Image (cartoon, rainbow, N blue to C red; front, side, top):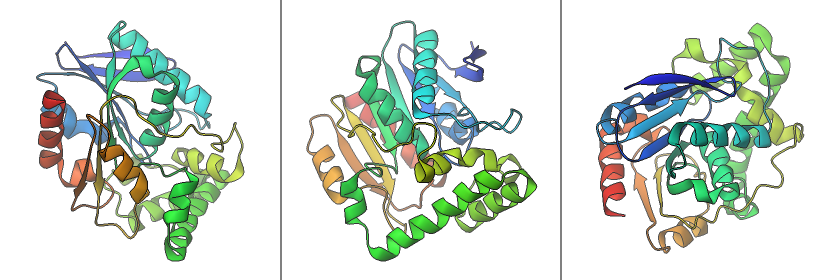
Length: 264
């Protein structure tokens, strides 16, 4: 039976039936709606748990959340929806960054990871793998969004929607606000605990990494992908898409994940 729970101040949707649970965590500038097509596909055999990241809900007050706060929220969601069972993480964009850190801190709560388009992006190895042009592009859009967060209000919202439009974000523009930009503000200012001491992403559980190859630059280093692919139970696949793989190639993505889950 589908239900909505209130956990740590956020609405958590629990949909579908099955002995295993997939916890879905989105990124910028999305909401739980990013996973609509995945829930529709997987709900017949899995329990699907999803929610809008704290601070991303336009109906709630503007607030930045530290990494420690987010990990604490994820832990409550997993423990209160899964009753001691390990979960499968399905992650995209900032959801990957936060979800990987959750796994590294609480590996006993996770059975498998499906990472979408973001690999070791916060690492020095990744930064070294980028061209000067790619670094400039990253600085441009991330600093713009960080400034939009700092400004806030209608101007900050307009700046955020403008950048989302230029990046061809598939999310509904009416649901996009500058309040969603706090991860970029934290990234570039170091406030709220910063992201400067993230744990290296070294999964000891099976992991499937799917990324879009039709982008001006990747969000993972080639070496990280090679190392991951060499691990037992892990797989790395490139789709001919841009950043929003789950939306651009939803059917192929869903079927690929299903095969991997049932054969791993």
